[in-house]
Image (cartoon, rainbow, N blue to C red; front, side):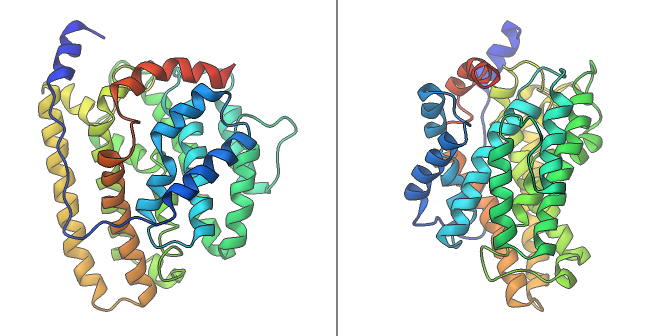
Length: 333
């Protein structure tokens, strides 16, 4: 990274985002954090104490507690385990990797096969056994159709990872509109949102779930989290090899400074929050209790993610960026 870019990074101002609804947090956060770490150790996701300490500073269960504050303890525990698995697998297979290698396709197809066949491969890859455990628990907690909503979102995560990796093999990123399509699915936000109804007032019927206005609300919530994350993770991503294009970087590559890219992205985030608020008020007028709970769950995700970044996690700190390459090597060893 050039000295000029380092200097620019040191001077950037990262905005806070506010929401016209109150945030909340599950009372089980601390307990589930301890249980989640024990589960991760049991399934070999953490190679040593050094990586366990790093995960402890990241606080993935607190993200679950803030994004699903009304979930019962059993469901919250499953979601927290899913979160730690997803972040570690995504960092290793998709996000913080060299652009491509001999294990890229086998790693990702193994995760799809767990969803398709509900079993392990002959030679399980990193995280595969943990992923099967999560899926088996979710199959018990969700209806068949509901699980397939979640599973299809995860299939899209693994599939669009190929588009993201392809984008990073080029000297110039794709245009912002193309990036938005990729980001919407590689973020993992869609399967996360597919757990918001069961964590509130119960499962949403297909007749309401697939309504165009409800799907539009999902896109607004997805964009708020993804694009604000592009701002908050900028310092980490610019310091890592391989995957580094995000919305701020694309805007900066069009002749803007990094700060101008941040400000423009933040403006778009605020617009998405406003549009979600406007549309949700209309939808809620004739919504079932389950749909109202689903909308509340989407609100929890937007405000909960921001609260986690501000109050809990060190994932987007400079110290995390400096340690990232060494930790990735531990997982690959």
